[in-house]
Length: 319
Image 1 (cartoon, rainbow, N blue to C red):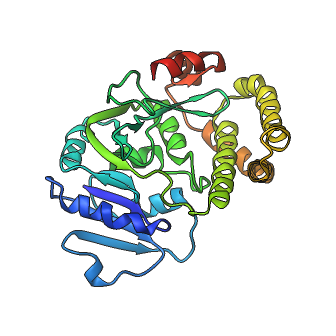
Image 2: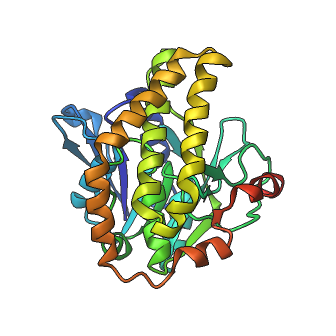
């Protein structure tokens, strides 16, 4: 098995992750860390640890693909560098991953409450994380996607889906991957027996305004990219007018109601980015049209994995 970690930013958390991996009851694994610096031999400890150095930060999806390319395990477990695993986590993952689904580990916060048990998306691409803030690890409903802080699969599944789209610098790379996997007929399974503690957004700047600006820009721009790339033409014709009005309305509220210039700048930059990226979107849509997906968008909606906006209030009460 290969444990794959991107450590280009937020390096202060990585020693805790490595220490928790070293204490795992399951021992037959390697660790591949993608980093932007060289490691001294003494930093690697006793684990089978390989460091892949990158000269330029090209984003999370690119680095995750690079980690997979430089690994050897039959099973791939992607972990953020700001998580810690429990002693039985790897053993439980190995047991479950052989069934052929994408495996979502149970992600909890430092206080023990649930961070996420995977998530859904609505028809405008907004995420709806399952179980967030609850105290019990009960799986109320299956997720559309696994949250990227802790999830894995077989190498064969990873290769068949095609890896991560490197356009997703931060955010939505796992959503896009799982969406394609779902349409190919693969499942996403939540593994409540395997937990990780997540120090969320540990990889971002400690400066509040800079962190907010970057989060808004990356998450909004990649949400728009996800929708325009993946949703069918009939669905886009139905949701784009509402999505546009909602987006412009949010920008207006940023200035007039919230009086938050940082949010406005982040959304404005995201809108500019997606406008410039439209040729790439068109190329991706043409490429995906050549793939025969056995599971359609309508079926995903009927199964409650893509939500209509009217269903969001009901979901928040059950997840």
